[in-house]
Each structure stands twice: as C-alpha cells, then as structure tokens.
Length: 264
Image (cartoon, rainbow, N blue to C red; front, side):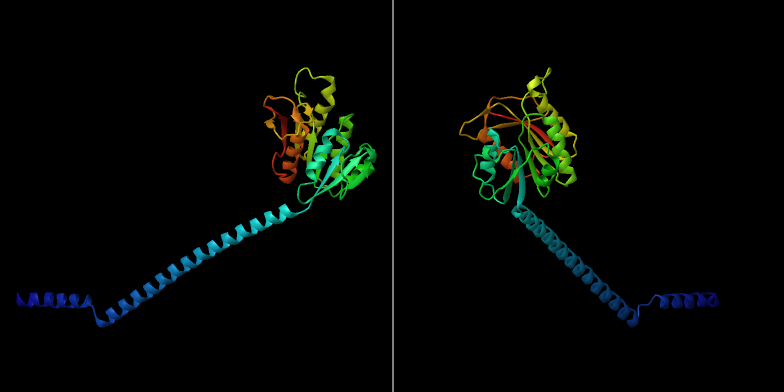
C-alpha cells in the first residue's frame, strides 16, 4: 500500500513544482508589463499626435479655403453690357460702376447714345449681328449681360455662339414678364425665344423677367422662380439694376435660374 502511494506523492510534488512561480518568472512578467505600458503610452501619444495633426490639417484647409474665397472676391470681374444704350442698361451701368473690382465693357451700335459716364470703361462700337466684332468683344469677359430688343432669336444665338467659342460661361439676360402665358402676345415672342435659347445653351444663366419698368428712385423688389406664378406690379429700373449687381457680385447665386422680378 505504501509502495503504491509513494509514486503518487512524487508525481504530485513534481506537478506542483511545474507551476511554481520563480523569481525569473516575476522578472519576465514585470518586463512584459513594462513593455505593455510603454507600447500603450506610445499608442496614446500617437493618437494625440494624429488628433493634433488632424486639427492642424483642418485648420490649414479652412484657412486656404478662406484665402481662396477672399482672393476670388478681390479678383477683377470683366463684365460686358450688350445693349448699353437702353433705358434699363443706363441704371445697370450706373450701379455696376460702383461695385468693387468690376471692369465694364459697353457694347453699343452708336456710341453717342451712351449717356453714362464712360470713364474707366471700355467702349465697343458693334452690331450684335456682326459676329467677328461680337466675338472679339466677348473674349476675356467673365459675365455677359444682355439687354436687347429686336430680333432676339438671331441675336441671342450669335451671343451664345460667341460665348461658347471664347469659353465664357456666365450670362445674365433681360427677358420679360408674361412670356409663359398662353396664348403669348406677339410682342413677347422674341423675349420667349431669348429665354428658350439660353435655357438649353449649356451656359450658366440667370434669366430675368421684369414687370413693366418705372423711373422710381427706390430699391424694392420681389423675386419669383420659374414656374412660380408672376405676382406684383411695375418695378423700378433702379431695383432691377440692384438685383443684377447682386448676381454680378455673387455669380454663384441664381445660377441656372429663370426669375421674375416685380414690386409687391
């Protein structure tokens, strides 16, 4: 019996010795803990570094965007007024000449009919149907403002062609109220043609459909967007000119928009 128990005790003693924690084990464990602590601290520092770098990167992006916008707003805008001798164009020219960083080119068939101060402006004597002169005048412009009467279908096609060939994309065009009424008045058909041509041109457009004009010395207008119903009554030329100036100052506003303007 004794002989049977002895091997069992020896086995248990041997087994216990296998799991005995030695000083070497403790030293290794401490070393592992220290290594883990160092690695953890490095990870934390790396995260903080990445977080700080991300904040710095976002700040740099914001600053660059702000700088770019400021630079863009300070860039000189070249604006050509086609039909510069018209009664509405006079108000538009007077208003735009007070907008910072805008250089005006006035295109007209008869220079003597321009009643605005032409100081600091480029004057081009040309007929819209004279394509070579029209194309030369549009070249280098940032915004084309159209304020015409007559055979608007042919004239608009010529202007659109010249803009595309010269890489000029932004256009502001004066049409008329009532062009979407059925039946349409024969007087308004040319203005409808102008709107239709520009809308499918692929240009970045703002079509303005004013109510009848007045000479009122006020800026008071209401904007509707196609296909909203046209409301309100006659609006001052000064109000229309003020709206045109806001679009020139911020060309991204009213982009590819067809608007009515009136006084409520």
